[in-house]
Amino acid sequence: MRNINKITNIFNLYYSKKITREERLTMLKNSISIEDFNEAILLLEDGKSLEDVRNVILTGWLLNCFNPSNEEPLRRLLLLNFHNSHEDIVDLFQTMWNNSTKNIPILSKAIDSIPEYLEPEDFKYPYIRKIIYAIGAQPQPESLLALEKLASETNDIKIKKLALHQLEKRKELGRWEYEKNR
Image 1 (cartoon, rainbow, N blue to C red):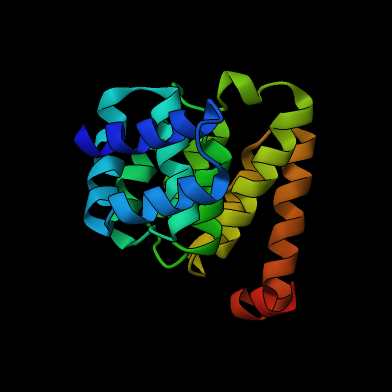
Image 2: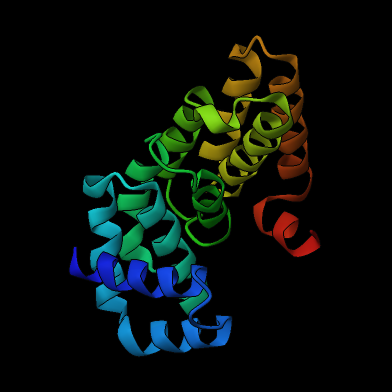
């Protein structure tokens, strides 16, 4: 918890305008090692604090700290609804952690457990599109099978359309060609 507190204290100084954005970055760099960050990620699920999750995830982006040891804890965190960092976590699975078939069932479950703050239609479908892209970025043929299953089993026309579009793109270009041509 000590590392989460360090991160939160630095962000509180920034949010209260006691330090600048540059000072926040310098303080984070000087205070938080990769090991500290990894420990903070592991403890997020236990603390159940929206603010802590937001600050730790933002620290990961600012310091480029995300690494393979964060993948499993963030799989679990993605399916919990006490925070508002779901889109950031999905982005990580699309761009960084896209080499494991273990991510596919978690991402599929995320489509079925939309957090309350993302339920309004203006937020829901862009979030689902991100999840579908993250599924498509995972290893083939498993990702293609998951997209086919989603398209065939959903009753939601918009989700079906998103899944079929991603499936078509991935089949047409292949996984890595698609990444190159985006």
